[in-house]
Length: 315
Image 1 (tube, rainbow, N blue to C red):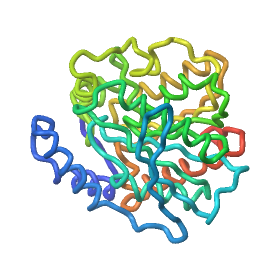
Image 2 (image 1 turned 180 degrees about the vertical axis):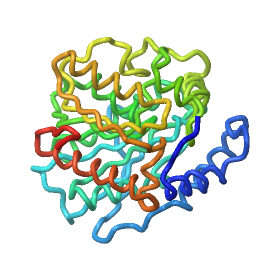
Image 3 (image 1 turned 45 degrees about the vertical axis):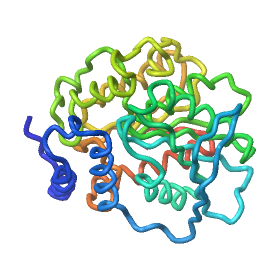
């Protein structure tokens, strides 16, 4: 397929692609991580003024997870929700440093405190390790801040965020919403976008399936609700949801189907389609006008979820 990206987006895609040799996934995991971290460093945006960072250890029921807390104020305001953030990276890449500038900007632009979760990665730590770390971080953040949580995830982190919200929908601690950015929902079916955009820039269908196999150590357990938020088939009682998709992304159908399932179950879900955008466009926000506008919309929806109502993409 001929992808007609804006010139600035095409330049971004070309710059990212230049970091990756052919068959990158066949390389040792350490090489993959060095390539990814180098790309993240090269595209890192300046740290916004007035945002502090503190590395902490989240602890719950004997489990410990490294997290990084971002604050725009010296003290967290207990009347405001906290963003609990799960980074992307195919369940094998990324961490606190790779998404540091993104989290800092979310904090600066919403005024909300952000907790970025350094969940364990495959293949050293197989499913359900990331989900277990998400539960630990959720429970710790609820106690630490004594504030409602806004659960946010990007790509692989979108999967973790959604699975967490399904598991914690009846929890005593309140979740004001979930916001998912081009989420990888790990579904057994092949959606239209997987067919149409199987070889899309920056993420292919084959890579999506390879990540599912890597995180599970072989056969993906698509019937496990800790692995896929579609597994339980029950979409009732979920918090207000906003899903941002990218048009040129094999995952787009999964995000749209998730919104539809929540709506059918009587919940509130808004789909924000990213026209002519590729997977991973958060990193393009400083390089592309189109990506920057979508980032603005993400920040706007975070702020709106934090105070209650969810607005459609037409508002």
